[in-house]
Amino acid sequence: MIGDCYPRRTGADFLTFVRRAVKPHAGKQIHVVLDNLSTHDTPAVKAWLAKHPNVTFHFTPVGSSWLNQIETWFSIITRQAIRRGTFSSVNALVFAVHDYITHWNTDAAPFAWTATADEILAKVAWVQTSVKKLVDNNAK
Image (cartoon, rainbow, N blue to C red; front, side):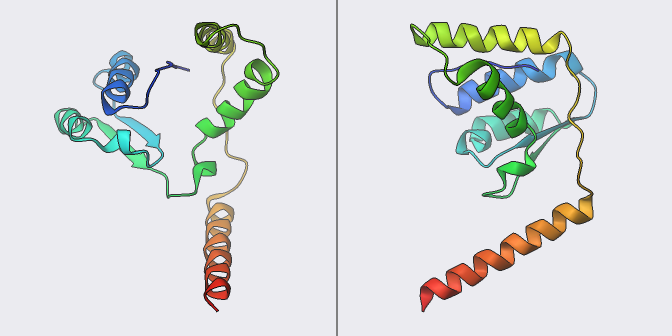
């Protein structure tokens, strides 16, 4: 796990993080799954991607953060290190996050999907149909 904490969400900060994350894997094909946050799609990020054809960004559909497995990790760190914590400052919180990442990496293992692609796609189709019904009903 590679993580950083920034005071804002900017394209420049995101690019700093991506450069750091990609560096140890130079020359390899790298696929990065991202949500649709505007900082992931700035002109500077697009220019950097054009210069790094071995890096591919994949954006999750809007409202489908459950497809992004980092959400699972965010849930774990929230439950185990942040929720109900007492932090005397933002720096103390940042230290706790970095400390947790260090601890996590001592015994890290990849997450494995437990659903098949067909099950996931069926759920997506169901959600799309249900949302359409709700929108149609609210329009009446």
